[in-house]
Length: 603
Image 1 (cartoon, rainbow, N blue to C red):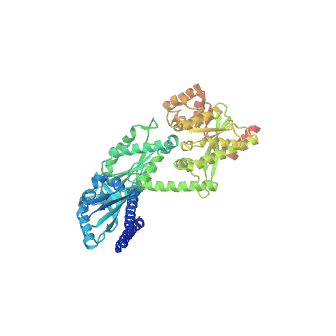
Image 2: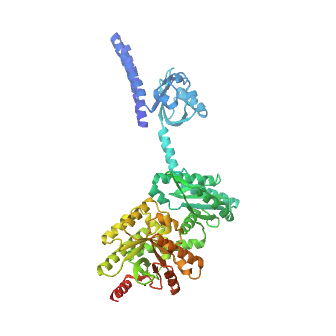
Image 3: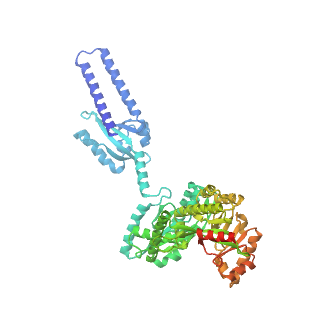
C-alpha cells in the first residue's frame, strides 16, 4: 500500500509541475488565444482525471483541507468510511469531523508545523472517529500542495484497515479462545490458572480443579452428526458456566473435555458442593436433533497445593483422575492421589505392552464348551481371549480388556479375535469335527464402530461361514444404549438366523421387560446368581424367573459359572438349556478342544 501511495504523490507533483510549466511557456511571450484555450482545456481535463481517479478508489478515502483545515474535498469513499455525506463535511474543520478528542491538539499542531516549518506529517496507522462515535482504523498518508504559497492545501489519503484489524482480532481470538464455546483454550487457561495459583499462594488458600469428560460423546457425533454434537457442547458450556462462580476460570480443553478451577476452596468442600453441583448441571436431558438425550460425564479432581503447584501439573493430575473414573463407568468421580498416579502409570505401560503383544503373537484364543444341562453333551463354544507374554506370567483378561475398551486398541483386539475364531471354525468344519457354533464377544466400544457389521460379515464370507458356525454375545448395557444403526444391524443378523446372546444377564439393566424389543435369541445368566442360588433364596428366585420368562419368549438360556454338582442340579431342576463352567470344562486351547471333540466322535 505504501508503494501505491508514493506513486500517487509523485504523480500529483509531476502534474502540478507540468501545468506550471505550460502556463509559464504560454505567458513568457506573446501568446495566441488558441494556445491559452488549449492549456486551459488540458488543465481542466487533468483536474477531471484527478477527480475520477480519487472517486474510483472505493477503499481509499481522500479529503482535501485548506490552510484552516476546513474541508474543500470529500470523496465517496470518505463518506463510506466516516459516515458524513459530502454536503455535511464541506467547510467543516478536520478535527471536528474525524479526530477523537485526545488527538485534536496534536493534529492541529502537526498541521501548523508543516505549513510554517515544513515538517511533514509521517504516514502511520491511526484510529480516527466515525460520525457515530465508533473508532475507525486507517492507514493515513498526507500530501501538502502549494505549501510555499498563501493558499496551501492538505490532502489526507486514508486506507480503511477495518478488515485487517478484524482479521487480526479474529486471529488473536482464535489463538486464545475456543471458537465453538468462546471459552479460554488450554494455553490461555493455564496462564490464567497460574496467576490464580500465585494469588492462592500469597493468601495461603487452597484450590480445587475439576476435569470433566462427557461419556461416550463420540456416539453423539457418529449417530447425530457433528452439528448436533456442537450444539450439545455449547449448551453444556452454558450450564457449567451457571454452575460456577463468576470469577472461577473455565476452559474447553479439547473435544468434549472441560476444566474448571475453584480457588479459595479446601479439599473437604469438594464432594458435597462442587461435584454434586456439576452433576446436577447434566441431570436435565439435552435436546439434540429434536430428541431428548441424557448425558453423563466422568469427573477427575486435583487439589492445590496437595497435588501440584502449577497449572500444568494440576491439569495433568485431574486428567489422570478423570481417566481412572472412566474405567468405573458413566458418571464416575475420582480424586487424584499418588496411588492413583502409580496405578495409571502401570495401566499406561500395560496398554503399550498389549499393543506389542498383538505384533509379537502373544495372544491366543481359548474355547469353553457350553454343554446340555441334561445330557452333558457339548453344543457350542465361547471364544475367550488370553494373553501369555513371552517375558512374564499370564495377564488376566479382567485387567487388560477394560484398558483396551478405553482406547482404540479394542478395535484391533476385536478384529483379531473375530479373524482367529472364524479361521479356527473353518478349519474344524473342514476337518469334519462335530461342532455347532463358536460365540464371539463384542464390546460396546466395538459396536459403536460404524462399519462393525460390514467387517463381521466380510470375515464370515472369507471363511464361508454362516449362522450355524458363528454367533455373537453382547452385554445388556450394549443393547440398552444401542442407537438405531446398531439395532438395525442386529435385526438384520437376527433375520439371517444368527444367534445373539445377552452375556452376564442380570448385572446390567436387570429388567426382563425390554427383551421383547431387541433381536435376542439367548440369555446367559451371570455366574454371580448361579454361584449363590443354592444358598440364597433371592438369587434362586431371580435365576428361576429369568429361565422361565426366557423360555416363554422363545429364548435359549445358558447358566454361566456352574462349578459343582449342587449348582448343576439346580439348573436341571429349573430346566435350563445349557450350562457353562468348570464343572464340565475349563477354557482350553484349540488343540485340546480338538482332542475332546475327536474323542467324542470316536466314542
